[in-house]
Image (cartoon, rainbow over all chains, first blue to last red; front, side):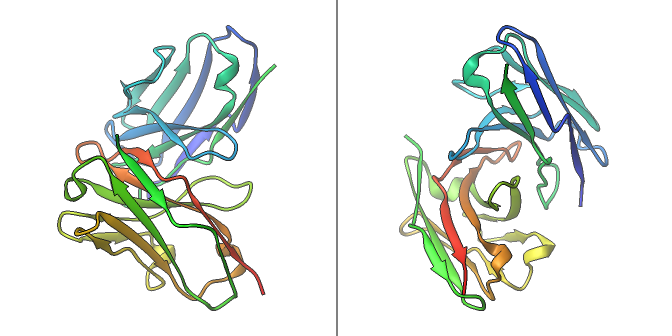
Length: 107
Length: 119
């Protein structure tokens, strides 16, 4: 199984801040890396697929980068509605493992 | 629009089985995969497995092998997840989700079904 490790596990930032979350895969997954946002009591939503492609309808302040084993989700200017838990997931092979999540709080 | 609507909450006793349904609409069912993901209370997302709605090929996480099946019914565009020999640590919200066919990202999710296992 490919292990996915996110950092940090939690962070607190202010509105307008630039926020970066990283995800590391246990082996190369090329660009088969997806990012999801989950708010309490809700199903996750796809933000970024294939490492850097923005899902339709997702605000352009979200962006993704990386390839191989190291990936990054960036929020360019944090908004109050971005308070959520963020998960990376590899879709290179089964089982399609998730990272442990990063809980983002707005100060 | 694409929708995945899951069956309602279940309460089961240890050792029992549960079958969750996922009725889809708004897209060609056979052209995509269906993944099942669960989330225990206060925990992260756990991928359980996926099935091709085109040919029925399924891949299950090793943890659930022998205890889970994920059949589909193309005539009703419905997917199912059956989990047997339930234990208390199977208490979780179970999500079905559509897996797109190029990058295998999960692009649409059901609303989730809470399964509670308690004696």
